[in-house]
Each structure stands twice: as C-alpha cells, then as structure tokens.
Image 1 (cartoon, rainbow, N blue to C red):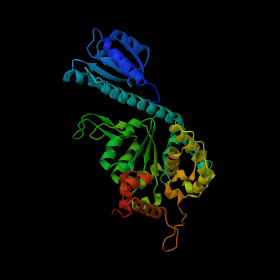
Image 2: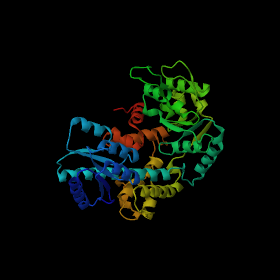
Image 3: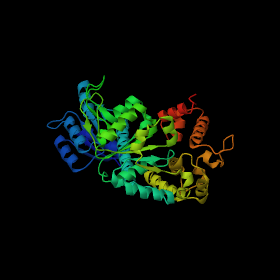
Image 4: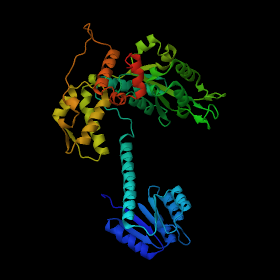
Length: 452
C-alpha cells in the first residue's frame, strides 16, 4: 500500500499478540500492541490508529468498550473483533457498534491477512475521498465566473447591482451556459449571502413530488407521512431559492408558487396554519419565453412576478474569447482533483476547441477537459485526449428546407434527435450527453412530438 497503515492489537494472550505482530509487520504495517484493555484506551487517546484488532473477552475493559471508544475518537478507524467465545449474540452486538469484522480463535493467518488488508483499503479509500472533498471545497469556496467576454461582463455588472435589492430575477439561456452559477453569484453578492441558497430542478419531479419538495407536509397528511417535513421554501427562509426549468412546472403548481411570492406565506400539505417565509426567488429556463407564454405553459402573472429583472446568458459559441480561459480553469480544477501535474494545453487542442460550436455549452467544455485530464499521462493535453467525435467534427450551417435560419427550439429538437440517433435510442445516455435528467428529456420529447 502506498500509505503505511497503523495497527493496534489488544489481547490478554501474549502468544496471540506475538503471532499477529509477526504476520502484520511482515505485511508492511506499523504495529503496536498491549495486553491490557485499560492501556489500550490510553493509547487510543494519544494517537490515531487506522485498524484496531481487539480480543472481546478481557478483564476490566473488554473489546466492546474498546470498540465504542475507538469509534467515538476516530469514526473512520476500522475495528476487528477477535474471540474464542463466538456466539450470534456477541457478533450482533459487535456489528451493531460498528465493528468491521469478527474473527474466531483459533484463526487462520491467511484469513487475518485478508481481513486486515480489506479493512486497510477501506480506511485509505475514506481518507482519499476526504482529501478530494477538501480540495473541491477549496476550489469552490467562492462563486467563480470565468469570463472576459464583454457581454458576460455587463451581465455580471448588472447582477452585482441588483443583488442587494432583493428583487426576483429570471435567467434565460441554453442548457449549460451557467444559469445556476449566476444565480449563486447574485446570492453571494446579496444581503442574504450568509443564509441558505437552495436549487431545485422543476422538471425533475412529478407535480405531486414537487409540491411535497417545495411545501413539505404535516404528520398524517397522507399514508406514510409519519413525521412533519419542512419543504425547500421553508428551509430557504432568509435565503435564495433557485427554481431551474421553471417552464416545466405544471399550471396548478405555478398558481401555488405565485401565492407564495405574493403573500410570503404558504401551507404545508395537510396543513391548516399558514407558514410565513422570507425568500428571494431566482428562476431560470432554457426555453424561449415568448413561445411558452403564448402557449400558456408559463402563466403571465407568474412571469411578471419573476421577471423583475431578466438576464440572458449567451451560448459559449458566442463567447469564443472565453474558451481558452475556461479550458485552463477546468484544467487546473481537474488536475488538482485527480492529483495530476497536467499544466498545459497544446495549441492544436486550443484551436480545435475554439472552432467547435459547443452545443452543450460550458458544461460540455468542462466534461471534455475532465476526460482529457483523466487520459493524459504527461503534462500537456493533446488532440489524442479529446473525444473521437470532437476530433472528427465538421462545422455545419443550419438552415431549414425553406432556406431560413431555424429557431432555437428547432435547433434543440434537431440536436436531441441527433443525440438519440447517435446513442441508438438510449434515453439515459442521451440525457447524460445533453446535460439534463431523464424526466426533462421525456418532457422535451413529448413537447416536440417525438416520444417514440
């Protein structure tokens, strides 16, 4: 193993300790031992061990006490119980308190090696996951929007100006352009920055589930409602609620949301008393607002409540100056997360990315760079690290059969059909490539009449 594992052996039989020490030291572990349960507790208080092997039956301080204390001090430490008095009851008791495994004397040394190796691998995996989380948190402590595009810079100026005013905001733009990131940016610049920011995708739930998510329910409101559940609106009180894909919300849900915005109160499902809330709403959609208003999919009264300020985010194809900047940002992010020394992007890669149209926008660029970093064995991203379909792409000018430029919805429909064709009709894979969930894809297919 790349990192040495520290092991503590606790057993009142000296011969058992001697055998275990001999075997485990030969395996490359750092091993300490004691024949006293009391002394083991002192050792656990002084230093952290990765794995503890303890006898169950000992005088004064037994194995269960050592197990409990170990988990209190260091929850990630794995404890292996050893006993010559195995019963179902003692095994259940040990497992209930978090024991990793249970060995019965006389044990086979090969079994000991195997169990300790597996426990050690689990410990190292937990350490690695924590380190990755720490790195990710350090990368995402601030809301960073990477851009040098004049249009985007003006949008960010507007976002900063409106942030303290508490007005509701509607953000429009294609999927993957960073609508949630801009919403977080507005929240971070507002007086609500120290309060919750909660995002919910309105297209990912059925009407009933979305109502339960947003409003919560009272105990006994329906079968299975065994406790009071706070909804996201209540949990966000004082902060900002981001409603993504607002146009996918059913008309009846839109009426309920309108009441919350107007009255600053709502009823939990099954509730009789109104719940007062103080929430700022930021909504977003990747659809053409005018068409959903005309079709009635978005209520006009709700639109006017949300549309105090509208921010339109341009697609990445209109922000070519940002491709180079964003590529290096994602390179640094993923090389740090993966523990790699990838520091450069070849000129050929930059030229290819700059010429690409990015139908999936920034999200697609991020996926491309993440994949490239994962495949890169040197310090520079090369053409070979890019997806095959990107290496062989051709620039295409879209026109309808009548010779006119198609609308955004027509472009979206054609792109969805193309992705479905490329994935052999696999909707889960198509949704992943499109950067949306299966429910949202299903809704789009239904809207465009291409369900089959």
